[in-house]
Structures are given as structure tokens and as C-alpha cells.
Length: 288
Image (tube, rainbow, N blue to C red):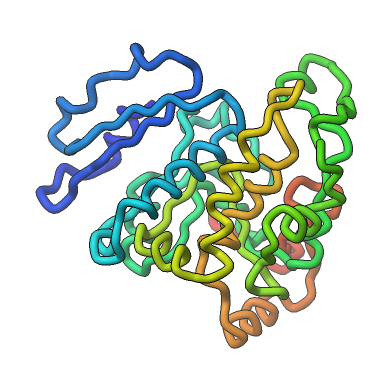
């Protein structure tokens, strides 16, 4: 999988790839020797406890990066957060989404304008922007992995899945983070646990009075274990990265998004991507 990702990066003298592999399964001995690749200038392998999903790994990395880099050091870098799941069609199971972005596309977008970029693309009639107050209503009463659902197991309600009894995403932000999405009208959301961001954005956010406290809180919250090997915090944090790391839309940009959307509707509230702005298919032509 890692070789496939590297294969999408051009061998350019101006490009220096630094890899940090955050391992949770005790299989560090199976990691290839990436140092032999001319594009790779540094490889670090760090063992973490097997909790918190990819989100704990990402929060862990962000906090260490913020601690050890200045804004000047970060200005020329883009950070890609990618799970070790092969980026192939059979592993793509995100509703209302089309496919994975290429690594090259993620790098180009994040480096050209310094913006956050999601590693999966939505269907053309569904936006990455969500109506914030609908998104904030997201909650899980019972949890079940897709593999268990396919096998015919029923979803169960387990007390330690939502140990702190969060009512919804907004309650999690309020009680656990003391933070809210910066744009109360529309919020960018990225699903799938793969995204890119300009490294300087992390440093800039760490100098903000509210956001600087969010990063260590996220890491701490994601270290909790549960009998399902999954916690509700992971689902909430997945829906938090985009709104936290993106530049919030200005009032003018928000108005443009609303005009394009023109009140045409949202992905239904029962969906895992509830609140995403959606256009009726008979009002839009999607490219083939």
C-alpha cells in the first residue's frame, strides 16, 4: 500500500518525502525499508496503543509536529494523513462519495493554496459543505462495524461506547473540547480518514487561543478503550478534522455556497453524512 502511495509522487529534487509510520498492531518488522527509495529522506516508525483508530495517530502526530516546528520550517511542507488500508475500490464504502483522490492531486491542492483537502471525492451532486446545525445533530445510539453487518450481526448498544453520554456532535464539542465550528452556517467535512493539509496551517492554529487547546484534548480523548474496540469519540473526531483544519469560509463565500445550493435539500438526517448540501439530480448534470 505504501509503495502505491509513493508511486504517485514524482521523483523531483525539490521534493523530499519524510514518512512517519504510526504502528498499532505490533507488526513493525513487516514494514518495508523505505529508506532505499530516492524520494524518501527520512523514515520514523512509532508504536502506539491500539486504540482511537487512525484519529489518535493523526492527533499524536499533529501535537509532536506543532511542538517541534516553527512556522518558517513548516511553510514549504504539506502533510498527508493516510491510513494503511489499500486505496482500492473494494475498500471504498463511503456513502454519497465517488472515489479516492490521487496522492498527487492531494499534494497539488494543499501546496498550491495552503488549503485542507479531503482524500475522497463526493458525488458531484453532494457537497463537502454541511449545514452546521444539522451536522451538529449527528449521534450514534448503536454501533456496528460494516463487516459485522454484512455477516448478519445486529447493532448493539454498549455503555462504554459512549461512556460520557454525549447527546450528539455539538455536545461533544461543547463539553469535551470547549470549542465550536468557526462557521456556524456551513462547515467542511471530510470522511474516510485520509486528508492533506499545509503544515503551516497546524502551526497557525496552534497559536490561536482556542484551537491550541483542542489538539492535545483530541489526543487525550482518543486514548480511551471500549469493549467494542471503537468509541463514539472516533466518529465525532472524524467529523471534526475538516472544520478544524480548513480555513473557515468568509461571509461572502458562505453566501456564494448558499446561492449555489439554493435551498435544494440535504442528505437525510439518518445518514452517516447528515447535513451535507445536496442538489436534486434532475437539476444537475454529472460528468461521466
